[in-house]
Length: 150
Image 1 (tube, rainbow, N blue to C red):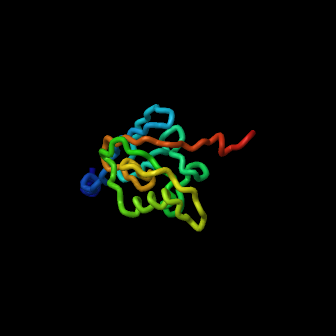
Image 2 (image 1 turned 90 degrees about the vertical axis):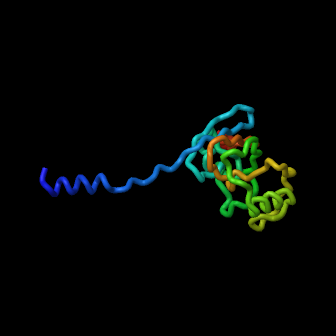
Image 3 (image 1 turned 120 degrees about the vertical axis):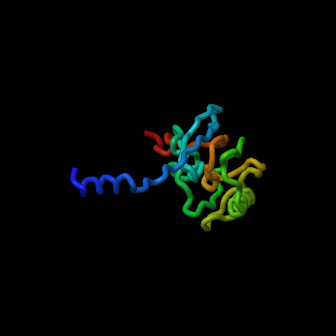
């Protein structure tokens, strides 16, 4: 091997490789009572990670899509164990309160939502930051209802 080949080999070995993104597991308790463990990258939202479920978390939007601003309040979940999940922020709490009151969203009226508990969170705002979270899901997307009668 020439001296240029050796230099090229050494440079290749010295290049820093990007750090792998950590992945953590979260347990989803589905509406039928079954449990499904999902492994997702750090900082994924519970809504994003739910794409690994048989059907994603229901948001009341077509095919489980998210609202454009994250403030519709329709992706409500109940946190059974908050280990490894981000804490609630002021804007998420305000969104939940607005949904309970039935405050208009995106210029459209909406029905008042169910009352809040200390476990209530929004799946689009709750981030995965470690292992161990347990989340009770109220509704999944019903793909058959989206297709309509065939």
